[in-house]
Image (cartoon, rainbow, N blue to C red; front, side, top):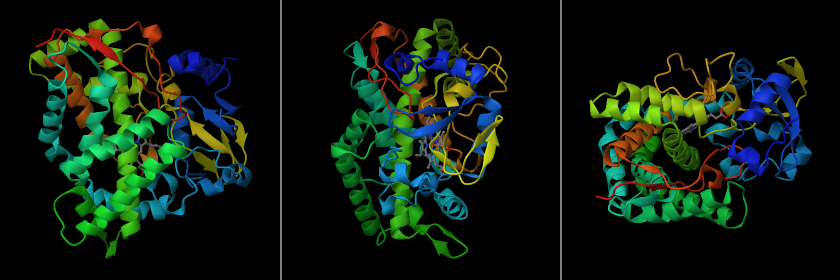
Length: 406
Ligand code: HEM
């Protein structure tokens, strides 16, 4: 039985996941927080569990004693005003809120945002191109999504550096509702609530105005719901995208043949390999290692194991996406992989709402980096790189690179 949640595990959890998939595909374990939870590691079980409505997203279904101690580590889980966000609720509330937000956060809005993402990407690269070296996490992968989401939401430019600082605090110190992190979350929420209040009287064409305007059969989001929604868009869309860019660039730098193929195809003006490539990077080493918490509402069976009501169930997306029963040569990075129905964005009713934006940012970031810094290379021994701890996400703390300055 491999050791889970150690430093070695954080650096490369895939061998341990392979062991679990084979020997204990639905495995009850004690998490570092002290909570006992089921880990689901096979693709077929994972996909089924993600769509199983008997698994609730509402932490109130969790065993009351652990929940009362705040052990599940869900940021702000016990603050009532945060409870209305999409990842913490079930139908019919989820259906209503998701329908409303989908009216404002449309694929078209994201597509129209493409020139701005390109501009932001170029501006960030301008910041270090002449130096010949950079830490791609701090100087690139981290600021890009936070500025992008702020812009999309309609946070005025002069306030965006505050968000950068608050988000920096959250990413450095994990998602737990403690100390500086709790203060940053609070500042963000207060700011968003005030912004929504101000915008109500002067609607624009930004996403927050869209959230206020959205209606479905005469129903609107309340101000609180709109604030919770803006917050979850920021929260769900920030660290995930940092990790998509960070893990993605890292995987490319460690797989030179694949990276060269991509550079050749980009130089020829093609986009096909970039599109399948970003999906493959999500499968191969995606940002979300474990899907967010689910709790059994009734007795059920997953992969032959009996799950009791109240039991937490964690679907290990990173393990499912390397399942040899589903993917040929799962440990090989193949940017042109077809039939790549990975679970990196989840599955079922909670499927990632921000997937079009994540794809846009991921594709723009990778294509621009490889085109503008064609000889970019790792400036550290992979063994010295540190991965951020934390249960749900998988991402590097730093990614030092070198390239020819210009
Ligand atoms: C949900 C992954 C980027 C907003 C999810 C889920 C996953 C995921 C796995 C489902 C979690 C579960 O079922 O427990 C990712 C990845 C991203 C990314 C890998 C980047 C590469 C974004 C962005 C946004 C966003 C950019 C928005 C700006 C959301 C929201 C949900 C969600 C609102 C909740 C949807 C619901 O519960 O109905 N994401 N995400 N995500 N994501 Fe993303």
